[in-house]
Image 1 (cartoon, rainbow, N blue to C red):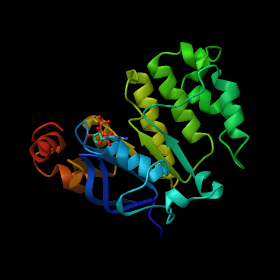
Image 2 (image 1 turned 90 degrees about the horizontal axis):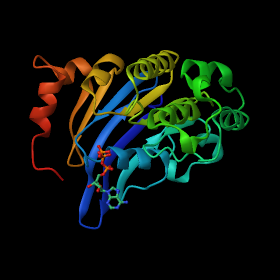
Image 3 (image 1 turned 135 degrees about the vertical axis):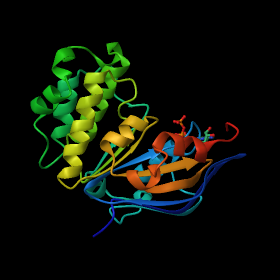
Length: 236
Ligand SMILES: Nc1ncnc2c1ncn2[C@@H]1O[C@H](COP(=O)(O)OP(=O)(O)OP(=O)(O)O)[C@@H](O)[C@H]1O
């Protein structure tokens, strides 16, 4: 079966900064893969390459077997994306925005159901500009989900969410993976990785320092201790 995501020997350099330094890992369909790593480890750069907003200097990335940099509209409709800076139109209200996005897809998630699941109906009349950070996060996640994509690329989907929001995000992500979607999410939360992920990739300094199932990576010392041991070093 085609992997959801393949990252192979990827290097990406920005002037003096090596954001990705030969990273290789993959993420299957039907599973949640959590990408962990300190600030500046290269997580968002990886997501940008997977989305097709950026391009590796060398190496390859594939999403559903396709090079995202050259992907057509048909491929992009199969990939749901949530970036850290949501990029939502600031004057829009959530339901018209989600209805508009839903109309671009053949078999969208019913907007009212999605809005209820993510608690969006509680601030449905607020414009994006006036929303709290957590409310914007919910809209951005709904926008990623509404097309019922085969792959979800989520950059810190639960950052800034309250406990209810986080729990609902975890439920939604788990449900999507259980129905066959390949979910890749970045996170700084060990709890999130342990609760929701099947696989973990730990990046440090643009390299993969650990990858495998959560249990394999955590080993006997636990995910948090393993993470600190593997990622200790000067900040970038
Ligand atoms: N467009 C750019 N121009 C210059 N440097 C960049 C650019 N994009 C990323 N970088 C640098 O590449 C490195 C990796 O950044 P990246 O955003 O991928 O890290 P991250 O793991 O997502 O961090 P965080 O946890 O803070 O979100 C950082 O040192 C960052 O400053």
